[in-house]
Image 1 (cartoon, helix red, strand yellow):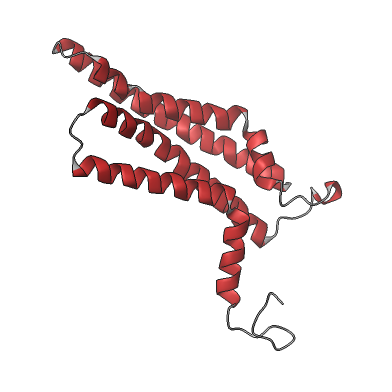
Image 2 (tube, helix red, strand yellow; image 1 turned 45 degrees about the horizontal axis):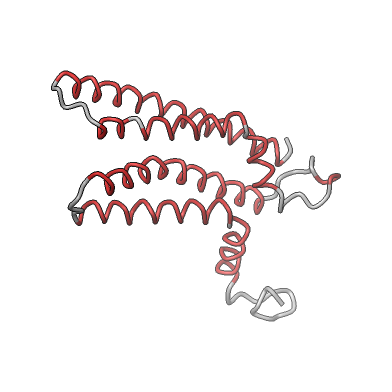
Length: 178
């Protein structure tokens, strides 16, 4: 399998995971909205229960239908020439693909929380410390997900530098980058 095919397949599997999670959120959202209707407390706030379901569903569908396009973005730095597309995947490339997919996973899990946080900020006039700390947690998740997704090559270089720091290379120097 080529690098592109591996990443496309992984994106589609991740898409299925997010679609399955959206079904779980759908059941929770519907039961919560039905309870609010029965208690005559149905208002605009009830619609916020649908947000995580829709975000998980949209993210999963994007990964399923556009997995090949996402794979193009992830593998664009790895594919140096067209003749090299069907070569074996090296360990560094597999790590880079893994970091990118973990970044997608973290980002996909953080987006529904981010939307819920913004809705809570808009609807609740007195913001508590717990709400602010949840917001900080979600922002850190989004930043980490983007960092892993977009910076997997740089992250891999940093891990290599830490792994080989202080070890002498073939020339006897301790810096492997020279």
